[in-house]
Length: 558
Image (cartoon, helix red, strand yellow):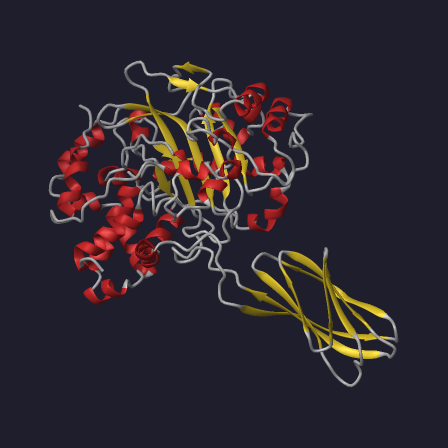
């Protein structure tokens, strides 16, 4: 007896009292995310249990600049992250046979759209009318309670009595059935990411009403004291006060205080080719980004005074359409599942140096594969859904918020897994349960490539990896590269870097629009990131519309 998703179709109606807000047909995926999907339903959530926490490295943020300049360190870090995301987590419920796996990969325990819909529907429905009208934020305690309720929500459904649940458990009789418990959701969210999205519903609804901020925003001016330096100089002498760095959206303001011992002294602030010369009491202002050198020159008499250095910042909110940036333990995973039934095969792609050079010199897409394969479950991660359909996991995007601009990792299946982008695969991946040894990996942490070595320093120990990196290298300070053959679709997407597309998360841009930008949209084009690089709000899972439909059901159109 095979399990059935009948309950998944009925439960939403029952739980919502037959009057749930209408669901919106999702937009086509942005940034060419995978499209095959089936939810982790309420009954499967009870079996899987609580979404596993992601053990984030909160010290990694301090290495941001070092990571940007070292391909080797980026790859070592990415493999460590992948090992944590792929590690098995025990199921909450025991299965009938001791021969079956009793665990699934960490990412498959995470929350999908169905989880978020269940939790938000219950939490928003419980708000008093005045709190709905005010878009009052949920408390952390309420979030705790409702995510805990979600684990057993199936028990409230009259069409899921205990007898039926036990029959459902008994029907899980293969390893691929166990893997199928996690569903094949296109996007899943770690607990930190899921909670932040639900908590941000007030900001998400505001941006749904008013639209996101433009790409370049100047925030309110904030004055920050930088330094107050005493300065003394003999007649006709020049004294350097110091050097001061400022970033984008910042202005350095320097003033030499006037007084009886200043005379005709001159304040000089130099930043590259820009030079500001003023008398005492007059401000010098330098626009960032820059490093400015401040000095004072006396005239024909000695001087003694004070130089006041301040920084004016007009930096906008990082993510105006959320309750601030995602927390450091937030992870978003996007998967591409391919049907394995009916003698369907998996397209294969060579990522050798010569193959990449030819592809990037051609139509710059993954549209035409290099071949096809029919891998077994021992060779590629395979799962079976309750309806009997079998799928293979071809590619996996992993985004972690351990850096301000996220860590961008992508895994893709290969029939030659130990070459080029799989050559440096560590033992931590090789030792995992499952066929993860057959997936290659690339990673970026910044828009621009900071490593001055085109081969990432791998020419000696992993020459095929070094050669492949050389083939996609666009030069130091030019844009970085990381592209998944199974996920990145469309002309130009073979030469992208994940981060370039996702910076526009929260806007109404489509993948096709972004690929028309210079360099296929890989450069940093924004000084703010409306939904902190997530497309879940305005595309993909379309949470903005989900929240708006719920609000409109209770309150009507605003």
